[in-house]
Amino acid sequence: MNSTEGNGRVKLDLSELQEISRGREVFYNFLSRSFEREIDKPFLEMVTNLTPFLEDITKQSDNESLITGGKIVGEFSTSVCDLDSSAEEELILELKRNFAYLFLIGKGAIPTCSSYYLSPDRLLKQEPYFYVLGTYREIGFVKPEHFKEDEDHIALELLFMAVLSNLINRTIESGENIKASKYLKLQLEFLEGHMLSWIPDACDRLVEIAEHREIYKGIAMLTSGFLAADVEYLTHAEIFSYEG
Image (cartoon, rainbow, N blue to C red; front, side, top):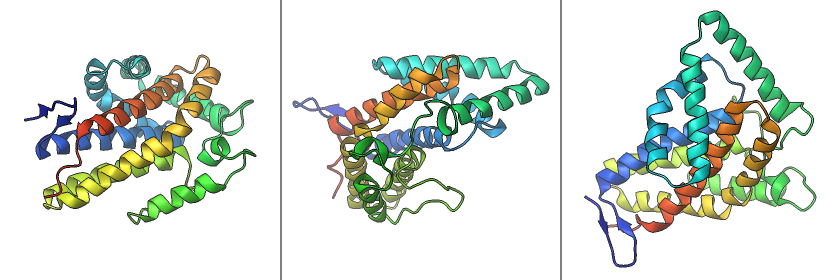
């Protein structure tokens, strides 16, 4: 059971912490995949499977971006379920064109690496990039071989958060609560000190240029809303007292 202390913090028991971390891992993996590459059939299946979870977190939140993004992605998921195979293939082709326009070759395609947003000259592989590399090294996280973008790409930073959530569960299961506390603190530091300094800006840009590409507008709003809600959870939950 959890309890609310006099300072407004919520102290969670370990089973609740694990349950929340599992949900956070799933959602961070989904957001990472959304920005990594074009939408394909497995991604459509992922969205469908995630719909109940989306409905659950949006009901529990008062974050307008998270709520609106969840509604858009939920409506997209419902529309996909009604498609036959031919229409689904046509949709996937259109969504691939959307991805290219928004992130690769379109007029005003948005940058997807933190160095662009956080360095004075809008260049890649600047100080923020090396900060990210240093943070990854703290847990031995390395870029997957198939991933060709820089390490401070939005998809990889989101994947890093998913990996940390997985480590939290594994260390709690093995009774290594000090390590679990360390990973939770690292998540908060990376999210609050780095990700929130540039990803909301990137998501705002994506919303602006998405136009009729509703799924990407929804993903952008979900991302910025979820990050805001997650840092609030990490800040206010009494999660760093499991070091015994």
